[in-house]
Image (cartoon, rainbow, N blue to C red; front, side, top):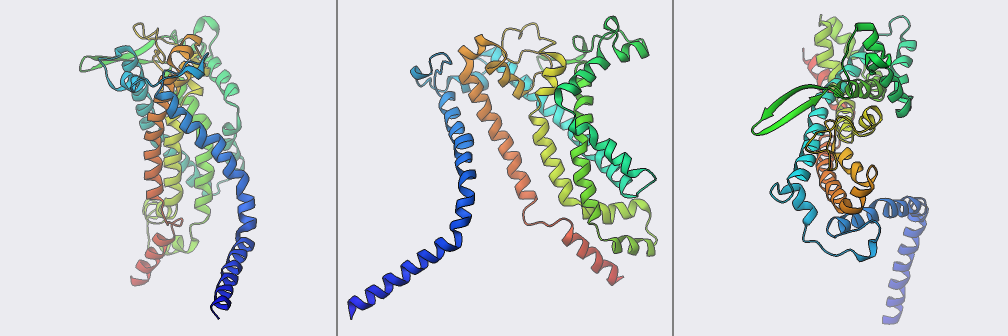
Amino acid sequence: MEKTVVLEEYAKRRSRRTGALKKYGLTILFLLPFMLAFIVFFVLPLFYGIYISLTNFNYSNPGNATFNAFRWYRLIFDKSYGKLIYEAFWRSFLHTFVFALIMVPIAVLLPLGLAILVNLKPPGYKVFRALIYMPSIVPLTAAGTIFTLFFLPKTEAGLFAQMFNINTQWFIDSWFTFKIGKTTFDVAYAWIPIFLMCLWGGWGGNFIILSAGLQNVPKNLYEACSIDGCSKWQRTKSVTIPGIKGQLVLCLFTTIIGYLGLYGQNYVLTGGNPKFSKLSAVPGGNKISTVIYFIQDIVANNTNFKERFYGLAAAASIIFAIFVGIISGIQMYCTREKKTGTKISEAYEKWIKAR
């Protein structure tokens, strides 16, 4: 009797396992290539980067790396331990943060205004929509060539210099300087073409996302606003913006993360200039350096840096990854279980009915 019960229980468990395998086997099979790629190209490099940041890793002799008592992290966080490296990294971090702080509101609000305008469907709006998105598909090197030709000095027939008789060396001269405590900050003119290039090449993606969101805002809400005599601003504030809140949050955080990774535009336009005189011998020692530029300056732009400071690049990458991860976590928190404007629209409809 007991043997029969045991066999029946075993058969039931085996049946459940077989059923689960049949149910999820195909899903697991399709997910397996992605999981393998995720482990090989993300998880393993992440842990290897942590390992490099904690050792005296030498690019030419990687097998003899030894633990270095957090030396690379001390160079970044302890000013007395490595003053020049400390200053170069935190200047790069400040450049990155301030650029994103200035750029992000413009890179979100400008496409929002254009999307609202196109959503009104004025004459020729389809052509206008295509023209807005077109810069987004221009390769970075081609865009860099265009903006370089615009901002070349007068002696090299730069377009702006010829049109407005400007003698500014855009990629060399300083714009203005200011002090915070004992630290002097030198703002280069090169930030202007970098800013314009980023804006021109980046607004298309946000424009498409916001335009798609506007198409999904219920038309009956606009009709209710018209019946109630709402102005265009009231209609935008009470219906349009709440209706695309999900898209706005998505654009906001993806734009923040995108501009925190600024590097290509700086390098294509300036080639590493203009330099800080006292920081010219260390990675990221120029006036338009960002965190990614600082890292790339070690691993790609200078063989001497690569040999001596590879662990520093890894440590800077880990620190910056944590910073970006925190921002991504905030984004996930802000967008959790939210449908695009659904709850807000329903609440607005109830408010209309109550009136």
